[in-house]
Structure formats: structure tokens, C-alpha cells
Image 1 (tube, one colour):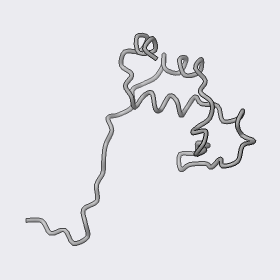
Image 2 (cartoon, one colour; image 1 turned 45 degrees about the vertical axis):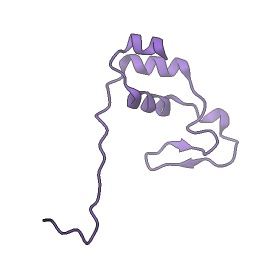
Image 3 (cartoon, rainbow, N blue to C red; image 1 turned 135 degrees about the horizontal axis):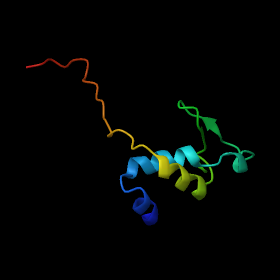
Image 4 (cartoon, rainbow, N blue to C red; image 1 turned 90 degrees about the vertical axis):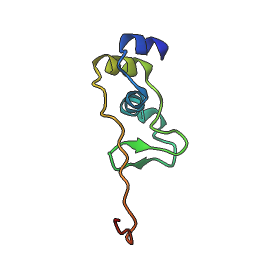
Length: 84
């Protein structure tokens, strides 16, 4: 992965997470039980994650990748919250 960052120096850890999800191969493991489709439409399995890593596809995608936005955390205040 070090070389991948040299080719695309703007990639960060969140970009890598996205690249792994988008380029992993579900089909070779499809016969195994436990696959579910998540809310984003990706197949995911508690034993296999998103499937087999496809290094060639990951590198090809990374070379054209646009960095994902900064991580945001949304919090919901308790129902009984009263501003001061």
C-alpha cells in the first residue's frame, strides 16, 4: 500500500476504506452462507467482509480516485436536553 500512496499522495485512510469496498470481489465467495446486502447496496459477510481484495482493481481505481469528504459525526441530543 505504501507504493499506492506514492502514486496517489492525496489518499487517506477513509479513501482506502472506500476503495476496498468498491473493488472487493463478492462473486468468488458467493456460495458461502451469511451474505447480506447493506443499506448502500453492497454484499457483506461477517466472515468475509466485502469479499476478496482485488489489488489490480484497487490500484486502477485509486489512480482516478477523488478523495472522499472529511468524516463527520452527527450526534442527537437527549430528549430532555434544555439549553442554558
